[in-house]
Length: 99
Image (cartoon, rainbow, N blue to C red; front, side, top):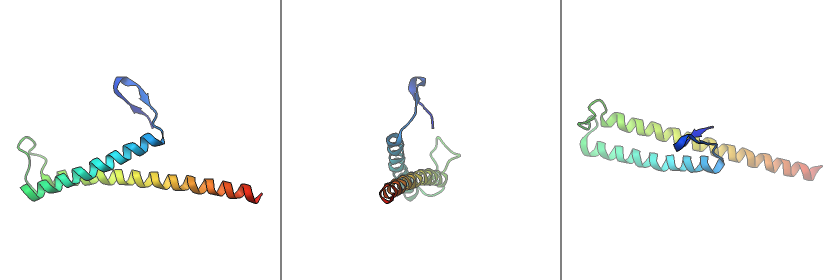
């Protein structure tokens, strides 16, 4: 995974960068979903901002839920990878003692 940061530098994220990014996406995602739901409750499902007539509150909340779902999937993948590495390390440790 390569990320281009300001100034054109490459950043090769390590595990901590990825975990921080996923945590941030989850926090922002849940906040945005709650905000979109509150807009629906206040203004209605099909209401839209005057400056953006092609995007109503329904499409907004569906987009935010999709973004959150993506972040949750990445988080789950990350947790599963961590668990697989733990199991591998435990297995290697136990194998050393058996031999």
